[in-house]
Length: 195
Image 1 (cartoon, rainbow, N blue to C red):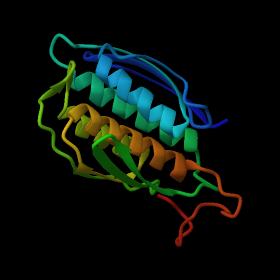
Image 2 (image 1 turned 90 degrees about the vertical axis):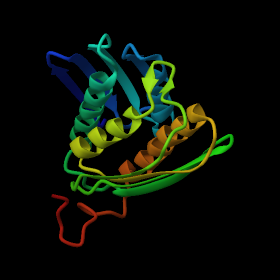
Image 3 (image 1 turned 60 degrees about the vertical axis):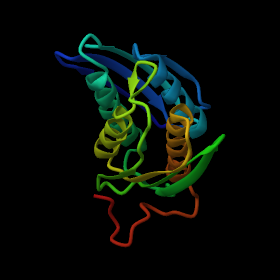
Image 4 (image 1 turned 180 degrees about the vertical axis):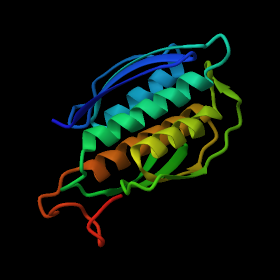
């Protein structure tokens, strides 16, 4: 089982996270941000990963620290759960339609963190979730998991649909990239290393 447990405690957040990359999409989430919990649940269902996550954050300030730090912890857990990354497909991509919205995600579990983000939103908030925080979340995941990550919003009017399409597209791309392939010997790299 490719699993990892990560904790993080600062003056801004107190987070406990357990990830199983080879799960079935089960989640137990408590970040204090309802819309963010909904997005994480959607991501995990499409990635077929199990995630238990609690976050006590300084929501009296705003949701920024909680969302970014959850991204840091999720990225660290993905990196730990993948171990040496031997035998995985390494690269994955997905288009995800959500009603009128269409999102694209491509990732390379390369060890070289990078985020290309092309998404803008009409509304400043979805519930108590600041729509600007989606980019901060995925940047934190990419940096701490060691992902080269491209995310693009292609269509859409409803920001709930547009955000959900992005989170689900990431989940599908992660499931693809992290999948074991019996034809891959060692790491899939022309230089023989992913660092």
